[in-house]
Image (cartoon, rainbow, N blue to C red):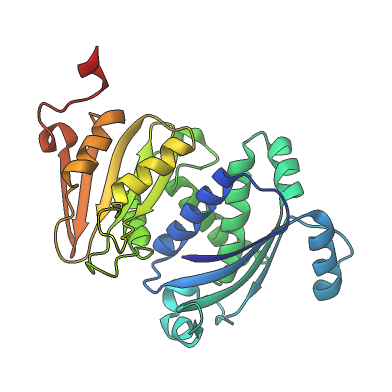
Amino acid sequence: MILLWSIDTQVEPSWMALMQTAADYALHAEGVKRECAVSLRLCDDDAIHEINRDYRGVDRATDVLSFPMINYPAGTTAGQADKLLRQAFDDEVDACMLGDLIISIPHVLAQAEEYGHSPQREAAYLLVHGICHLMGYDHIEEDDKRSMRAMEEKILSGIGMARDEQENSVSDETLLGLAVSARERSYSPYSGYAVGAALLSSDGRIFQGCNIENASFGLTNCAERTAMFKAISEGATEFTTIAISAEKSAPWPCGACRQVLNEFAPGIRVLVTWDGHVEEAPLSQLLPHGFGPKSLT
């Protein structure tokens, strides 16, 4: 999913990375096949208070506001409304525009403390809650509320952010879906070979990456290394699985990526998917007798 960010206040970069992952997985969980976009504003309480007052007649700050672009028929959500999504296509962003979200960062911090979980998880929850509204879910009637809560938990559980820590296991299907989503952001004008990756850290965080080519060719960066370098820069150093996606051929990691993976995760599982196929191999099989940090001691 394309998130059109507008940031009016200080926000931790790690929250934004998780919010992007949550947005991508929301479309996957809903079964939406089209690229979609959401205008997302992160602001303070004064700003969201003003929007509440001007557009909803509510004279106070709230945690999240959603303004859908699509009017779904009763009982229908985005996964069953491909025609409506197609009609919401926006040429400027080259995606179907779902609507606008506004999230109050002070509310993220306050509610995280109140509920006893991390601000990162609260930011992801409020984004997921808002996106569910943009996809046609609601919580006014009890049956609708149950459906919406189930979808919220499905998305959060899928990215390792479920309320119940025992449910915070990320499936291979989730990783593969996020690798496919990451591929959509590939910058590959020279080779035309788009690749996406989703890297799972031992603490449950997921880091996405795409290949980024360069006119000098030699400075091109693969999707696997993009994901790995993002993870390391966010403090993750232990990893269990990486999923890699391409369109028409098996995207096994190149030699450079195998060496980078071996630096931090010599035992990592490697999943690849292309054209409906999925294969798996341990890195030790792809890089036998690998040279790593222990080789220097």
